[in-house]
Amino acid sequence: MSHIYLDHAATTPMHESVQEQMTKVMQNHFGNPSSIHYFGRDSRKLLDEARTTIAKSINATFSSIIFTSGGTEANNLAIFGTAYAKKNQGKHIITTSIEHHAVLHPLEQLESEGFEVTYLSVDESGRIDLEELKNSLRDDTILVTIMSVNNETGVIQPIKEIGELLEHQLAVFHTDAVQAYGIQAIDVKELKVDLLTASSHKIYGPKGVGFLYKSEDHYLRQQLFGGEQERKWRSGTENTLAIAGFEQAVKVLMDEREKRKAHYQMLNETLINQLNAQSIDFNINGDLTERVPNIINISFLGTEVEMFLTNLDLAGIAVSSGSACTAGSIDPSHVLKAMYGDNDKRIYNSIRFSFGLNNTKEEMKTVAERIKPIVERLKNL
Ligand SMILES: Cc1ncc(COP(=O)(O)O)c(C=O)c1O
Image (cartoon, rainbow, N blue to C red; front, side, top):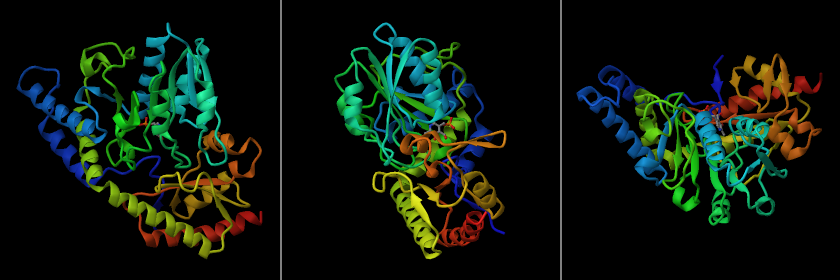
């Protein structure tokens, strides 16, 4: 049986050219980029080149890129760094109820330290209401953190409009763009964001590396104390190898983004058509137009997510639910709960499919064919 990977929003395999580039770097460049001798300068050059490529990819300046160990660390740096730097001006933060845990959990920690957090609601489309954001802004709001694309539903938030709304406010604007970076053209100046998070392993780069974009005029309190790396915003010897791999992933992405989007759109449409052809009962969760083509969250009527996922895995289909699985029991997705309320069936029967470069049209047909008997079986239980 062939195994079909449809969980690219969780992580992507490394692009072949990334593997080649990393092998080269691993074999030939080991110096500490902070060392002033030849070996250090050699690694520094790689680091500088990567920073240039990555800054350019979001229309940012060279020194506004802070390399981190991934999206989680970049979000933590943005949130704690801003909260601690600005706490004398206010302690109010605005976010949404559908953020990734790498945003929600730092905010919970800040609440326990006396900060106040407003969680914007979303409707069934999974989008926030700009009026609610406007009404939630206060004189003591120091940070607004809203994700660009939701990792469970693929629904896009109106980041440009939010940037415009916040332009003349005290509040700093951070967006977690981890799921957007591989698919949307991002221009930080146009979006008017002060802070932006991205991660390498969602765009065919290695795991354990990402960046925080920080506009030049924004001050953060550093979270890691030590050496003077990353202009002191993030101490610790840079992971030159991973950063060089990340750079290569970004280079390919910049060349291929539009082509990739078209490929994902084709896969997305084919899967839907094939599910329909199999007469399977399903509904798509979230807005039907404001969404990225590589993620689709589908509710299958009459199924139950835990058993469904296990059966799909046995049938060679690797997908996921947004739900956290703790000790064999499923915690329903906080994203779908925010969209539908606590008691809706869809929070217990939804699955996320996320497409990648190596998926094919034929695979989408196979997926629908394998899903059909599983849904029938689960319905009859
Ligand atoms: C929206 C979003 N933010 C943050 C993260 C965390 O990124 P990383 O795995 O690089 O720490 C993820 C990863 O799933 C994500 O989807």
